Image 1: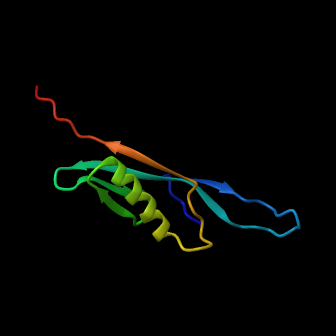
Image 2: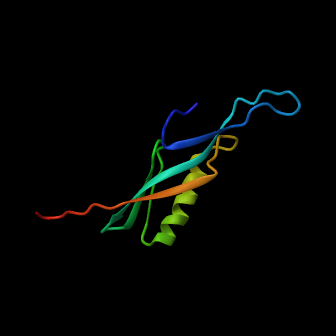
Image 3: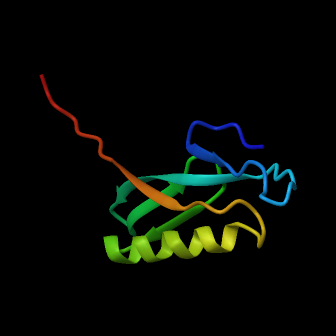
Length: 94
């Protein structure tokens, strides 16, 4: 069982035939996205070892989906949603 605030879980509960399904399904996986002058955008998943990049936002979205699909094994809890959280640093002089 994963215990990380970057995930939102959904408990599958009891099967209608009486089987106890102790499976947690990840409902949402959050990526922190930052602009990178060398490659466009970098993204890293919070709570998982998933990293990718893209020259454009569209390429980044495609690469994030592919990286998530490659990261999780078949039968493993798979996220239903992927959230891209954009982080931007801004310096204000005083």
